[in-house]
Every structure is written in C-alpha cells, then in structure tokens.
Image 1 (cartoon, each protein chain N blue to C red):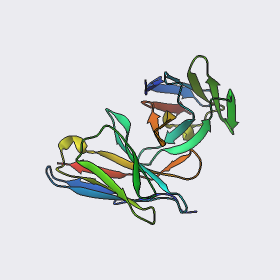
Image 2 (cartoon, rainbow over the protein chains, first blue to last red):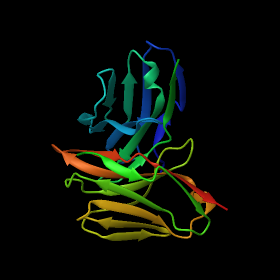
Image 3 (tube, chains in turn purple, brown):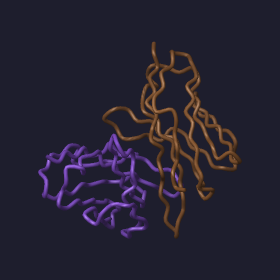
Length: 111
Length: 114
C-alpha cells in the first residue's frame, strides 16, 4: 500500500503571496488532518477533513484554509503569507481506527 | 486542559541502555495515546499506541507504560541502538463534537551513543 504523499516537498514564497499544498492519503482512508511543525511551537493541529467536510479546526487565523475532494485528496491554502508561516506542513491520513499516518511534509519558507 | 507535557527535552544514552521518555496529561477525555518517531527531514512515523484501559503494551523493543490514575504514560526503548536516535513525540487523542484531534507533546530529542 502506498503511503501518504505530499506535494511539493519544498517551496519558497514571498511575504504577501499565497500558497497551496496538496496531500494524497493512503488508499481507502477518508480522513486527512493537517499540522504545522515549527521548532518553537512544535506540532500544531490545523484542521481535519472527512468525506469532503471539515470536521475540526485548530486555533489558526482564517488565512489558513483547506478542502477535501471526493477522492479524499486534500489541499491546504495559506493566503497573505507572513514570515512566521515558515514551517513544515504535515498531513496525516486516517482510516477506520484511531491511527494517523503522516506524509513527509512540505517545507515552506517565506522570505 | 488539552496539553500533553513531555519530558525530558533531550536525552543522551549509551548503546544498549534504556531511554525513558515521560508524558503527563490533565484531560480525562483523552482516549488514545500514540507515540511517534521522527527522523530529520521526514514526517513523524507511528511507533506504538495504547488505550487507557491497558497498563502496558510492548512492540518489539518499544514499551509503553500507562498509569491512568496518575495521568502519565511513558515510552521505554530496550537495548537502544544508534539507529534509534530521533525525535520522539507522545500524543493524545480527544473526541469533541464527533470530531477528533490529536494533541502532541513538545518532543524529546534522543541520541544513542555507540
């Protein structure tokens, strides 16, 4: 079974721009969660999608949004990028149980 | 209430030793406690997990000990090897209004000396 894939793996953007990150979950998994990882704040929950619906949301500003498609693939968008948005963005795929499996992440650098 | 406190922040152990990483929580609604291992440049990998109705779980060289009354759980790595050098995260799952999320500890950077 293929694992979770995330694209792109690396991204450099300028302040004020917007960015879209993509995640393909494990085949058969319907839940996708997004996390932001930084050295200072650790792993922080952004949101979770299940069957194209956002089920849960963390404490992030409205500049962070996401969506999920009918094939369970998910995208995350960040608008009006700030320097502090530089981070590793991880998505995690969940099946019927409680386990979540992470992808390799997208390293976003905002200059 | 929704925090998971992890210690120590970093740990150095000689090969063959038994590193122990501890986590504590307050929210009794947490119902699933996974541990993740992360190598540099990679996403976290699920290592082992436990539910609160079990006091211990072993998978290979990795053991979780769970103390429900103290609201603490810990990871032990038996016969540690240099290849175990990584950052380890404990976590806890909470269900809230039919949605769940996982709260992570701050991480422990483990180094196993040859």
